[in-house]
Length: 346
Image 1 (cartoon, rainbow, N blue to C red):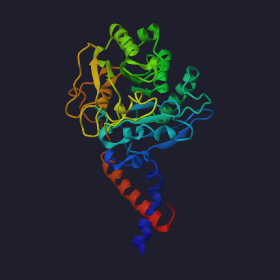
Image 2 (cartoon, one colour):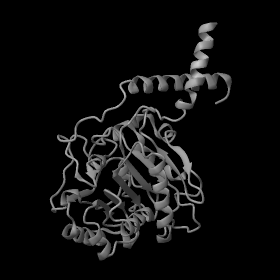
Image 3 (tube, helix red, strand yellow):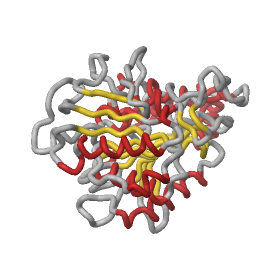
Image 4 (tube, helix red, strand yellow):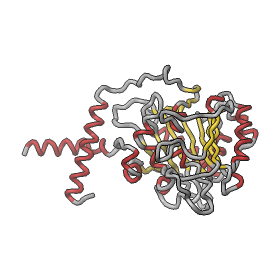
């Protein structure tokens, strides 16, 4: 009896900690389990958002990159809708998180544009979005590496990537607009000399403004202006398919280039994403081997330059008990879940 009481007290003491840290989930676990790793948040008089934290215990002192993910139009009617589409939740899986060089994980912040404009993410949203990002960084400042802030968006979200870079060209280390409906001005391009950028576009996009004929011109201007040609990439699609090789169907089926990002440039069979051609900032074709893809590239980008694995391969120091504590938290968390189910509370 005493042992049972002691165990119950231990669970109650640890419960506040258990509710803070996400479990490690593989890609094979499926979208529902991965979505459950995202935590709800909001800022006063601002947008709501969901986020994923790679922090596993209160003893974790590591600095992690932050990836801000901007949804496209029509993806945001209700809270959490920004991770119900396009396999955004994949970004939280173990396999992709492990690719972040010299960090072992990455924060994912997915704001929701809860404005009234049907297309979402207008240029007037720039100050609000910047305020949200700043507030999130302050809240998690102990664990966020501000030299490794990444901005990724698709469709209208990709347009917002260009809008944010236009106003804050020195805030982000890297950006990836996929199927942007607008293109940056020459002034914006010239201001982004120290930002690594990977553009995704389709040759036959349903929206003419997003087609590769436009993004290739932008990419060539970036090549002329940049201080980091090794950080630039352009991926074009001769046609766009889903990761299983099928077509989406419908008017906008050639617009979904961002699926290559959420699947790390890999089809479900493990091959490089179909119908794509990728070049770097020197115009050299890029090949992907040994499972490399988008996240491998992204993880090496920093405002201080490209991160070298061989130079920066030391794991940051953490409390020696952190791993044991995190494991205990995960085990006890699962026990609590089982107890809730047994008592009919879940």
